[in-house]
Every structure is written in C-alpha cells, then in structure tokens.
Length: 260
Image (cartoon, rainbow, N blue to C red; front, top):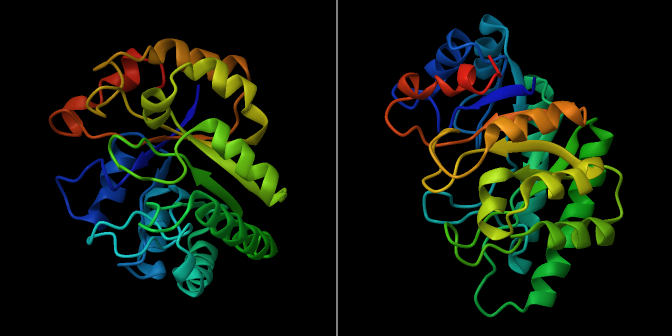
C-alpha cells in the first residue's frame, strides 16, 4: 500500500491553509506536502504537524513570483543569486519541519534564452542546490511538468530529466515523477516508472483529463498502485489533484483503490 501524502495546496482548500493540516489528519493522511511554506512561520507549521502526528514530506524551493505567473527560476540565467538565496531559505524551513527532501522547479524558459543556456543554468543551479542540501541532510528532487498546463516549462519529460541528472552528477539529486504531467507528455506510465525506479524519490498523482482524483479519468490507478506495491516502492505518493467537487466528497477513491 503506497504511503499517501495530502497536497495541501490543492486539497482541503475549503478551509484556511493552517487548518488543512487538521483536515488531512482527520481524513486519514499520514503525510502532507504543498507548494510553499514561506507565507507562514516554520514554527507555526511545525506545531500543526506535531499536533496531528503528520510527516512533512515535501515542499518546493522558492520559485519566483508565483502569483505573477512565474513557475520557478532555476533555468533563468539572470536569477542565479536569487535561486541560491532560495536554497538557504528552504534549508531553514526543512530543518524545523523535519522533511528530508525539497523539490526544484525549473521554470518557464525565458524569452531570448537559448535551450543550451537554459540547460547550463539549470544544471549549475542543481549542482549548487544538491551539494548544499546534502550537507544539510536533505534530498533534492526535480519535477517535469507538462507544457499544456504550463507552456514553455523547461523540464517536461522523463528522458530530459535523465539527461539532466547525468550532467549534474550528484548522488543527492533524484526525480520527482508526477503521473498526471507525464501521462500528458509521454504516457506509458508503469514501464517508465519501472525503468527509472532507482532515481525516483517521490511520486505525485492526479487523473487525466481534468487533474481530478483517481477514478475520474483515463488512468488505471488500481494497476498503478498494485505495481508500486509489487516493485517495493518505498517513497511517498503525493495526492496533488483538484477535487472534482469538494475534497471530502471525493475521498472515496482511497477505499475503492485499496489505499485506505
């Protein structure tokens, strides 16, 4: 049975962010993840985690002006210092919250920046982050995102992720495999996970189309969950989907898919 973490940026949005920890625990989740913790103090979040017996599984490095449409800055040649400051900030939070991995979003490739320059910047930033995070005992993961939802996102498929990992050459860098995004970009979900299991440190899920809960789209999550059990996947699976109606109304998939 996969270990499931509720993504509090998408689930339980019927209540304020800090109250979502309570809601996730009541629903039976043992872990939580979200996009960013930085709008709250680490101490306040830690108190909610402890009060509910939750494991802090994952959050992202600072990703630029999110509300303004930015989706990461790791491939931006003119934002390297900002990226490095963000690594320090993420380490400060992770140490308090107790999570042992953070995710790096490559970002949308800037206009006028070549593929080679974007990749070189991304690789250099990943090397810096992987080394600094390793010293702090934290794993770095990176995520490929589909270019239908986020046009121009630089890292967008598994093959590219493998190439980047080979160029970074750090044992502290792994792949965050988002089933929803990769179903759109490449399909072939189970064989791809199996081929790359050794470098996948985190998985996220949503069905397609719609990015709703399992059972609402084309993906056979019964088979996917059974496969993860069969191959002995030990990491967390983040429930990062948009509930079709309300969060509570859509949680029946946990039982029907045998994960609760």
